[in-house]
Length: 216
Length: 214
Image (cartoon, rainbow over all chains, first blue to last red; front, top):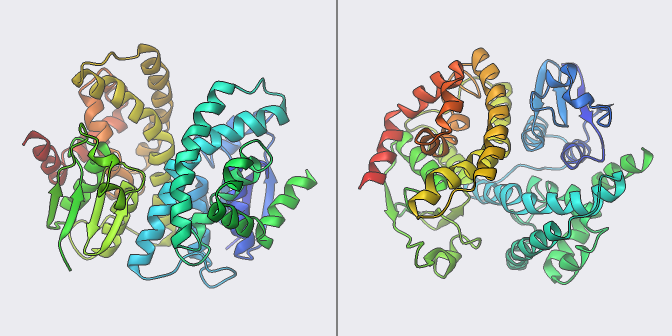
């Protein structure tokens, strides 16, 4: 099969999710930059990979995928024998891991993404003033989510189970941005959350994604 | 193992997703009512099943789960040999089905759920529909359905040529929206319309609707 190609920007949280997984699995890939300022992701060549016009797009031979969390699962399963083990356990354990994957997608991400946009992306790209009302509303929501995480991480070393899995990995891109904003205090004030963040952000695979961002 | 228990109301879209899957898999289960008006879902003992205080909660013996799409996936895998198979093809097809499951969760549901709330649920409770929100999300849903129209011209169901969870997860919101002005968005797109007809006609889904009527 021809090699893997990831289309996107390393600054995109969704693309970063995929890059982190590829690095964890020690899989070779080609990174194809997409010029989002020029609207490349809304034009035909890209739309044939992702009809919703969002990065990342992903190719493995003639297989085309989109939606970061579908891509990470594909990579984790396709390369089950390589690099970090990201999918394992009996059906009970998998089910619980599955729960926390949904938690990231439906409880954490909607809130965290809004905060990343207001506090990190808007200032960085000069895309307008931070909307304080949106920040306040979503900080309050994030607090509630992190309270649940604090309890969970007191019982379990990682969110899904005792080992690092895609559940934890999926959080990395948003957490990385938020640690550079006023939101950091919400993480720091919760000891188990704080320890978990220190752990997952120090993974060598994640450092490679951060290095890609710095090279741009 | 003790039987399966689902905690919640059959009117909840998230609960509906789980009930549809249980019926598709032909599994016995107990539906345990949760008095949401009394805030039962925000208190113990419900919180010990779902610390986020949302229905459904789910038990299979001593396994406790929450998040409807995690529960449906668990059921599909744990009871792979029973009832509807939810898959066709190899790991490549599985990856593509996975893509369209994410599409439901991240492209369709955010717009559809807001419309369900404004157009179907709020009126039931005597609350006023916010027409600005409706307009905004009808426009978003229209764009999503344009992509679905193209997809469903190439593929019988969203994920592949057979009915999978990628289709099933849409049922509760679609059912509500068919009873509102948003129905036109589905009717005006022939492939989407045919797909909606096919999935809402499934016997397992009719059983969920029957539960709502009780």
